[in-house]
Image 1: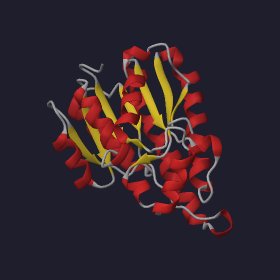
Image 2: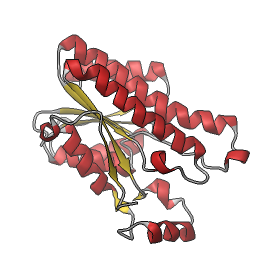
Image 3: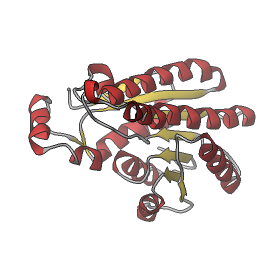
Image 4: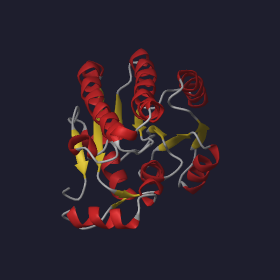
Length: 243
């Protein structure tokens, strides 16, 4: 689905981000994998099929880091990526009454500000070079439902979803699409930290009675990144087992 495409993926050091890199490489893309943890993201790149993939250390919440890394990517590949996946995200869970301002802000800095910085920087380059593009942002089903203990995370993912719809409207005239994937509960290092009894409760209320695996999310992301979804923009797709 992605032969000859250059794909830039944040949060590529594990979980859904790593799975996206694997599926996109399988589908013929050259993958530019970025993560705050350089060792983890290099492990991702080492697992990929094909050639030309590279890893970069990146703090998506830091404007200087984003600028410097993307300049290097543009130089290394002599072109901007035309596929972009913003998969970097963090949680800092607590009940709203007990949540610190720092934990609220840190989640927004990574999940929302990071998505904005990456999207803006790459879109500017695509517009300048008159290139089409497809941006896929990773939201969450909790953006639509809320979730106890995740007022910061839920709100940040709701912001990502509406940001994506606005980007789709603004960038359509440049043939740059932007969509959001809303994963439900997915087996990742992030959800592994949830106590077992809580995980079992959530499985009981999911119609398919299980968590997703990361590859199931990655397949939908790859579809949206590809030309098979060429008339899809401003859309959110829930991959949530019916939850």
